[in-house]
Length: 216
Image 1 (cartoon, rainbow, N blue to C red):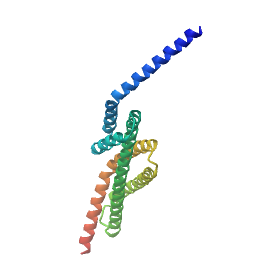
Image 2: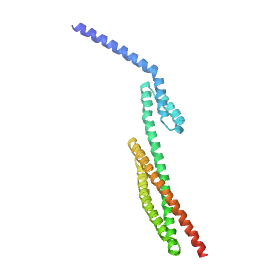
Image 3: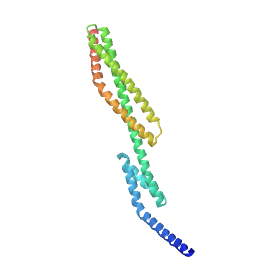
Image 4: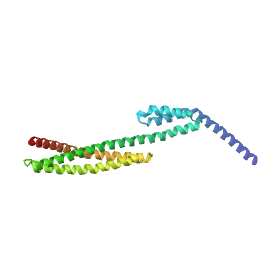
């Protein structure tokens, strides 16, 4: 019985060694192709402007790593790195878009403020102006101001948070999704108010010119 058991263990060890050798040979044979495919897949996830650069860098880096298994692990790691870089780029783009939108809201607020001041000053200085209509315009512009100020502060807070948060995959994903949602809502608000602010600015400019003519 002991002889049979020993013989069985010997056969198993021989088969295991042969199988291990076969697996090692297969890895040796297929690893260059697998590594190239992993790098190609990782590079394909990057923004187009960065692909050529990182394709060369990652190919060169893998070539310097000793051992087939280590090369495979490094190449697989590029997939994780590529995903993180993509979300970082998207988050940075969202921050840039938030900053531009913030400037647009500041400009809209300034335009509305100027229009309100000109209309109110015109009403006070020229009794022939149609007060009822102009007061309605001023009231609507003031309502726009409040909404613009509220969204401006919200944009500023999210922009600051997105810029200061750590560059982790979770943070990048959160601030990208949240930032895009805020931008969409801000764009809708901006489109709704753009017409009124434009008309208010035109009225304010006309009243200013009227006052200048009367004064001269």
